[in-house]
Amino acid sequence: MSRKMVVLMLVVAALMLGTVGSAMGQGSVLTVWADVTRAPVLLDLAAEVEADLGITLDVVEAQDIRQTVLTAGPVGEGPDIFIGAHDWLGEMVTNGAVAPLDLSAVADNFVPFTLQAFQWEGVQYGLPYAFENIALVRNVDLVPDAPATLQELQAIAEGLKEQGVTGFAVQSGDAYHHYPVLTAFGGYLFGTNEDGSWNPADVGFANEGGLAAAQWLGGMYANELMVPGVGDNEIFALFEEGKLAMFVTGPWWSERIIETGINYSIDPLPGAEGGLEQGVPFSGVNGFYVSAFSENTLLAEIFLTEYVATADTMQALFEAGRRPSAFNGVDTSSDPNMGGFLAAGTVAISMPNIPEMGATWGGMGTAYTLISQGEDPVASFENSQQLIVDAIGVAQALAAQGRVPSVPGSLNDEMGCGGDWDPACEQARMADEDGDGIFTLTVTLPAGDYEYKVAINGSWDENYGVNGEAGGANIVLSLAAETEVTFSYDDSTKVITDSVNNP
Image 1: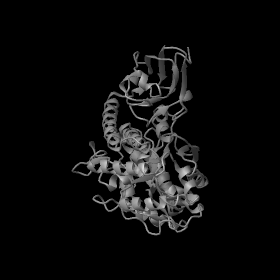
Image 2: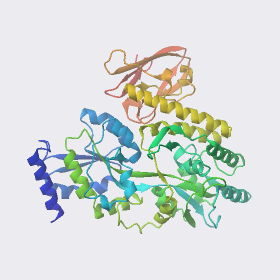
Image 3: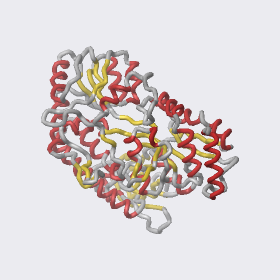
Image 4: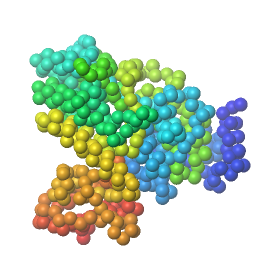
């Protein structure tokens, strides 16, 4: 029986059982939010879907999908299907934002761990299409053999310094790219419970191994063996010029690695003496969610299982995105780097998909930034460990209370917070005094120029800037003298105002 006949039978059966809403059928619209890379692949399916089902496939190139789904869905303005990472899962499930999926008919076509990444308490919530992890990229002419340990990497970097070459670089303040260094020495983010689930009460960032990683990083920066203050663009520029020997990145930059023209190799991440044999990176899985707020959940599931979970579509998604495919049988030979990234990912662990994950990035990133700036490595890690623990506690407490906005910005220190840009600071929290969804906060600030945003439930996972735009630009506040300022946030429009800019 052809796939078209199967799909038609499923829809007819659903209509007979009354499981498809009245909006279904001829003339219905199925809305999919995707990023700019994947959207064209999905749009290519539109004609086939319309011919088979009489349904319009509306593919929208969306930004800030994670935040917008949580706010647009409940008011009927969200998608039926959206693309997202597996570590969004805990937040999405606990907010009632995603619907379960029955993938039993296609499950055998997928790499098992990619399906498991989208499971919560044994229930499947996402259809995966790709996974990814970082690896070590090495200039073979400068470093003929891959270092087995970070100590060996350090020795190589010391030799290269005499030639005016920086040995190693990691994106500054980026906790994701630093994670294999942490794990190589025995540090970790979350421990696990007896059943293998993540335990957010066990944070091992500043354990003995974590502090060893901090000291190693501190020594590398102090001896100018690592370059501080760099992002991807700066790293690639140095690598292309032959001034950088090794760095870490993922398959999303595969084509850019090739275009450097450097004789390179992609290798597993080094371990550490006295630690692990190999640095353990996070593995991320990307996939499709069905919105729990959709009126077309069955149709969405049919679209995913019958049109997306196919060899042709998964091949097209790989060609567009250049990441290892979650679908068995996809030909990745067009990209010579896939084997290297896969080898580096054999020891990778799936990024925790629990809601507390979002509260950890800021604390970890702060530690790495401070170390790159010459601050004490041990103190930086120990302080950040406490920041992580506190942020997790605040996020859990706020989530239990409901939505609690705060005003993080360069004015937090003046509010009495421990530092600036802290979404978890108690003194920056807003209150809905009248129960009308309008939250306010009144504080007295000294003269000065400030910037701020609004963040929800003590983390940056959901934040709004100018004009209420999700993840938008900072709002500028200039005070000529000490001033009492009232901040107001409308949770329906996401717009935040203040009594100075908006008297």
